[in-house]
Picture 1 (cartoon, rainbow, N blue to C red):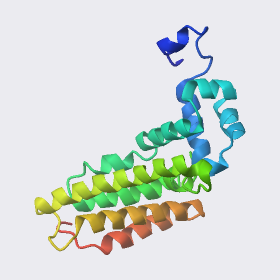
Picture 2: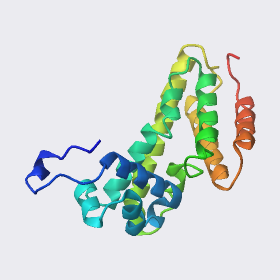
Picture 3: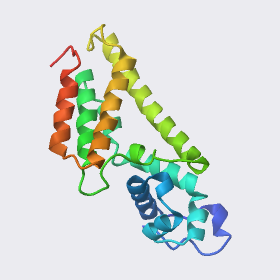
Picture 4: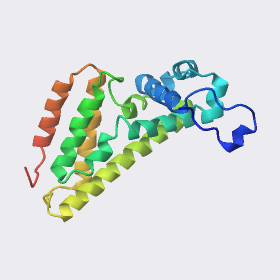
Length: 207
């Protein structure tokens, strides 16, 4: 279905002749595969099936397109992270994140690895905005996980000896490491074994 034309743009003439949702999906995949700096405007517009002027009209600039792509990634391929927070125990939360990372990072339907890791390979002033978007993205994810572990400890589900912040940092570090290994060609089975090892390294109250 065609995206609705904002009121401010209807005065300029006919509505957009492309599917905004599809275009954003394709942009996300380009950033995922090539990183922020590696994704040229030619790469992006060709994948999105639009002209450069249409891209600017719809998204403003490359930085804004990237920010929207990260949002889409969070709500789509990386949504396992948000869903994991609803698991009933701290152990299940952590396991869901690690196993989700192994599965999502090795999907045959998308680039291997994690957009939040791949796209972080930005250098120079042109990548500063993208770097900040990703730093904020990772910090937000770690903060949500820390909050969930704090709740688990308060409920007696996590031992008092476990530091929620350190545990959240550990789980996210392993999850990102899994994504890096996926990008180098490790299989899902190999990475699921890494998840097993990481889970066995932590003292859990249940299971």
